[in-house]
Image (cartoon, rainbow, N blue to C red; front, side, top):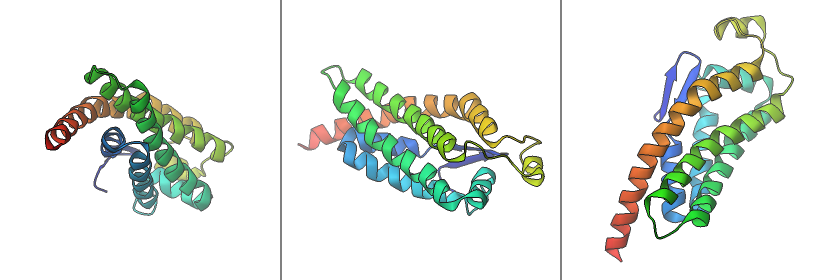
Length: 176
């Protein structure tokens, strides 16, 4: 689970950082490829002890795959598009906006697809107990993701992604 920080039922991820850096440095297509790889690792986590992932897999494997992979692929692609749209002579702002957008889009697209695919899903009593007594899957995930995961991931991606993107772009400009 490299790149995933598990805290109880929460799974904070740092994998959006390489996705945003790749999207900024190499463009939207690379962002989509890296996002797809992130999504595939996210999907794999569903089989390796991720509580929510294993619950979703038990409900519908195909929808779980769509939620995990499509959201991350699209987030990576759109991060590259955002960077190209906001790229100016001023170097730092477009990098920060792109990295923040990548993290935000990852959360928004994941939750949006989750809501679309699993809008009426509720936990079984056993699943609810393993997640701390909650019964509504969608409400629980949205509250945890927007209240805890998203702000942490947004801040980390904004700071670390921007710093790494800036360093890689600077190194690339010296090679040319």
